[in-house]
Each structure stands twice: as structure tokens, then as C-alpha cells.
Length: 209
Image 1 (spheres, rainbow, N blue to C red):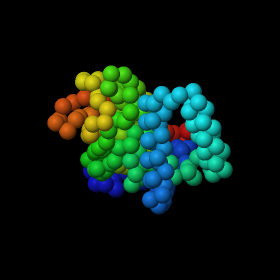
Image 2: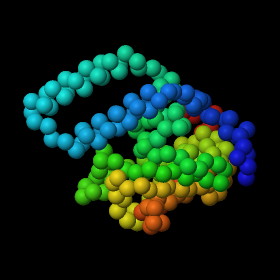
Image 3: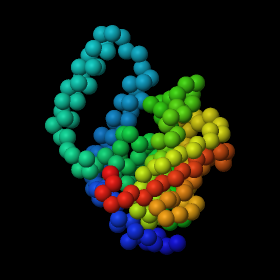
């Protein structure tokens, strides 16, 4: 299947707005990385009560500053900067796409301290987020119309470590009408399978959000 195959189908978005990539400078990447580091530190430090009060006041002041720049959904660069890890979204894991075409998508990255579940392992709930985001990209790369996730089935094969470079890769298995069946595998750099997942994505009907 060619990279542009199904593009006419993809134009049928249901009731989903069509977002365009955001063009930002290096200063935005710097801000996002600073905020990611803040997240890591927020869950891994134990400041004194006095320092906690001071830190809270400064973060609150920053929140006031940022609030002056709030824009409607789809206008913020977050999630639309395809060149940045996690597409510049703090919600998404900071992984970088290495391969993106109709044959599949591959992404590389790591789980940070912010994603800790316990005993040095990534929280089990962060893996569905990683897989679900990957499936959305796979669907887009394949040229399928905008869809919603109907189900995810994850097999946790091994403990997923923090601060260790990992690779996730997946592709479309088959298409049945509005249904797209997709699977992906998460591995370490030695090829060990940490988790695998299969999912069903269902195309939105006209007007469906």
C-alpha cells in the first residue's frame, strides 16, 4: 500500500476538526523540556515545609503568566509539533518517531521519573497511553479516516524500566469496513519484548465527535 493510499478516505473526519502541524522555534522545545523536568522533579523531591510554600508560590505565579496565553483547542502548539518528542504535548510520552509510513510506525524513547509506578518500573497505566497514541499515528500513516479506540488489549511481558531507551513499533493488521485492527510491540534495545498490544479503531461517522 502506498503512503498516500486511502487519502481520500482520510479526508472524511466525522465531526473531528482537522488540525495542522504547528511551526514553532527552539524556544518552545526549551519550554516543554523545562516543564517535563519540572514534572520529574515534582514527583521525586521532598522539600522542607518552608521551601514547599516558596515553591508553590512561584509555580502559582508561573501559572498566572501562562494563563494569559490560553487559546482554544487546536491552536496551541501542544500535540501539533511533529518534530518534538511527544509532539510537544506534556500528556504524551516524550518519544520521537523514527519511521512513519503505510507499512507501520516506529518510535523511540524512554519512561522518565514522572512515569514511575514503583520499584524502578514504569507505571502500568502509562503503557496504554503509549500504545494508544502509537495506534493513532499508525492509523494516520496508513491513510485511514479519523477513528476512535474501541478497545486495547495489552500483554505485560516484562517490567518496563525507567530511564532506559526503548522502541515501540506497530502496523495495521487488517481493515474491515469502518474497523481497523492494529498491533504493536514494545522492546528494549536488546530485542526483549516488554509488552505487546492489539487494538480496534472504529471510523467516525459523519458528525461524530
